[in-house]
Image (spheres, rainbow, N blue to C red):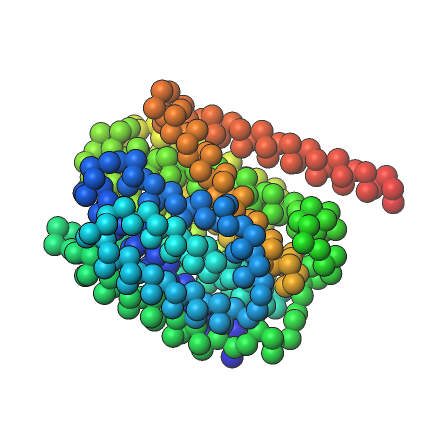
Length: 402
């Protein structure tokens, strides 16, 4: 199977699987809130999938590294389908099962997210990785929009059985298409020149010590995602509803605008890499600073047009840099260690996102959204300055040795 067909196959699997998971999370949260009237319980359903990679880090790592991505995708989607049937059938009698359902599907979702990165590394050569990452992972943005459209279409007349029907079809499609993937064992392992053979150790510290380039990319990715995704979680409802005083309709518009900005950012990254160029460290810092400026401009709440335009720019640049970091991590890591590294990346990133979301929520409550944006921007700028100083110091040291 050539690279284009592989990308399309992975794209369809991602689209169907992520859409099924997203619809499940949102509907279970919505159903539990209607059944109990408890906002915290409803929020717990949405937070549960983010906790799974942290709590079950070891299990996810072992399963993702245990064999070929093909059977993992197929079995995970089959298990998701079986779990969804049980959960949605029991939901009317036991609404609290929504939390258990979010945790169970969340585990299978997290396993597939790690396996996607492993699959990209195993199926694509070093040069193809930077093209495969954005094209394969764009499915998650479309899946989020698809989930929103489905829920909006059925709004007010939906039942657990209607949602189950939609979710079952999505998981079934993902599972069946997974069978079209080749066996990774039969594919020649083509490592990037930047991915030296690492010590075969389960100790992540030793692994990163022997690959400083991977360590640099990985840590930068985790910090970046924690801050930018964390602010997105804080602002996607607070900006329209609180800062601008708009109704629910504009919350939906911001979601659409966010997905559009993210999707265009991913496509822009793909075509930029097609030219053979890459982002320099200086370019990455400049784009990150511009994204922070857009973040603060959006949070000022001057008017709808300016805030939403700035938010679109923030999302576009954020996703552009996200895919750059993701491609660098995949390219710098060996296939043998990809599952370990990807699992740690997701666990650490989710921990950071949750931390920033909670801390930012408190700051927004007491100081305001703009002040929160300024504080987060200042902290990230300090981090970038420290990294730039460290990089320059290491470069100067290497010149002295030479």
